[in-house]
Length: 153
Figure 1: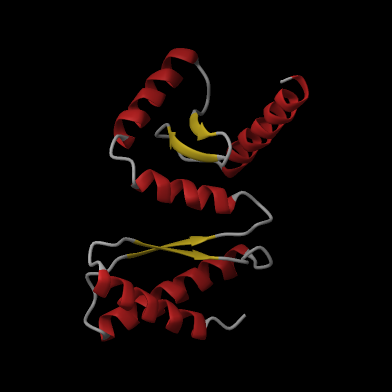
Figure 2: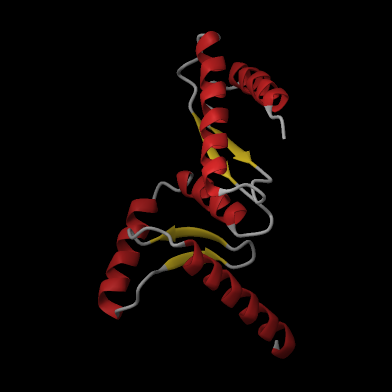
């Protein structure tokens, strides 16, 4: 859809929030990208990012940093985006990542996540890149464990 109005609203919201608290971090979720091809998703994100940064430069607010995430409710991209936002808030993240790397090297497993089970947000992961299929498989396994524990718990 046309996102020009949404980017204008984003600009106004960011400026208003920045006036109240200049230390705020801005995380922008671009929802409903499930119907787009990968090329169009990336182009749309790039265009929105460029428009938002141009608007901030025009307002002499280039010190404001915006982070953008493509999300959909039909896959686990929303959970991954929230995971990345939460990880930015954890000062011990490098230590957790290091511990997961040690765990992987000593156990021989491929990938490690530290999950919040109820929300399916991963608090930390090892240093290897996150494969969306591995993340989705972990989320499905969490659902299975929760379902079984509801039956027998």
